[in-house]
Length: 115
Length: 115
Image 1 (cartoon, each protein chain N blue to C red):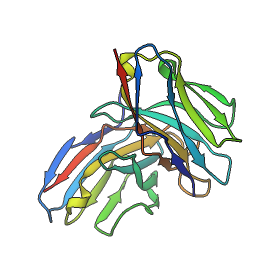
Image 2: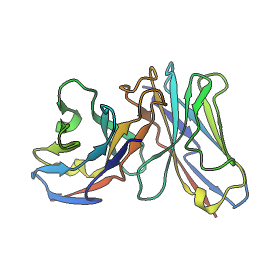
Image 3: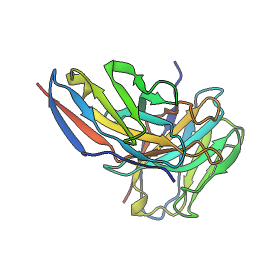
């Protein structure tokens, strides 16, 4: 069964490097979310897509963070000039219809460590 | 904006004992509430959700939760803990309609089950 997949699973970057994190949602899911989970904390919302449209990016912490979903399926979260405070697990989730009652299905996450 | 408070960052129970994980929410509109479980190095998995139907919600693995509007609570329970229940549990509320369908998470409760 194809769930949400994310790659890479682990990424180590030197401070100042750019990174790109990929999310493959469940096929046919309309909505896609990115969350950031710091160590010992709950996930925090970053951004949201409905199909290819980015409808909410209020959680992106700075203009170094950029996300796209150009064809309404695969999404990429890009972080430019990484900083140590960017170290976290980045979770991607998808949901079928973009409704509040939908279940969000989460991927395993990408653990980013910035040295 | 909605918020979630999980009382107790760590809960320890004996195998076979009652599990009670507390969640209180803040919302100016009828909330939709979720409980997710996270095993080490894995993504979040939905346990159950409340979407304004029955106030007592049954989920997977023998868990259930009761929505109590008067107490603004959505506590998670399981009558008899199993070793495999050891994990971190997150309560979440769905953001208001009109915004994105993002989830606002609590900080999580780590459940330890002792033999």
